[in-house]
Figure 1 (cartoon, rainbow, N blue to C red):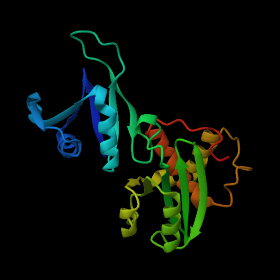
Figure 2 (figure 1 turned 120 degrees about the vertical axis):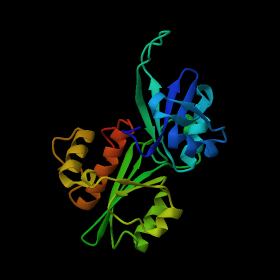
Figure 3 (figure 1 turned 180 degrees about the vertical axis):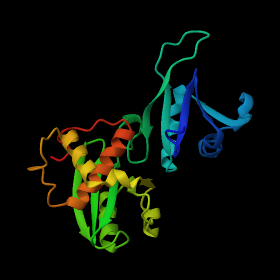
Length: 239
């Protein structure tokens, strides 16, 4: 939970995925399940709720539709009676980072869109995790300007990524859930490194990103978010 403070952590315990503490209190009414509790030694009694692992997909969909992020803490080790089972976070899902067919709406496009404003321009990086296509472009004006709103409507974004120190325009609330990210992921040098690593390119020359340096910074944030979500990107994402 410390590694994923802004996500609902679903912990696999036998035949159930359980949620604890604040996560349980938030998730129970969304999922329509009963909130219970359990004592954990010196930690005291914690709220709990859970869902059968066979039905977890439909419950994850409900959490995503409510704009929540979900971290799956699954069993990855051998199950041996009387011994603790090794667990790892195997997937972090959010409204704009879904690739699992059973969680997708076949009639809708799912795009994760990062935005970064600088020098009178807004850089936009729109990533579709299913087609593995990353679109980069820049719009003149401010983050709250009409040009950005028009582009976001065109893209039909499922999730918006912005720097955590940037005020969120009021218009964004009606468009998609907003996820703030640390300013470091929008750093130019880190963005260039991530794009080179993702595309397998030795140099950014020839990728067509030199003309959109602000959008490149937004692309760095999208790729960092993919890493966090355990999504491997295709080398031809800038095709």
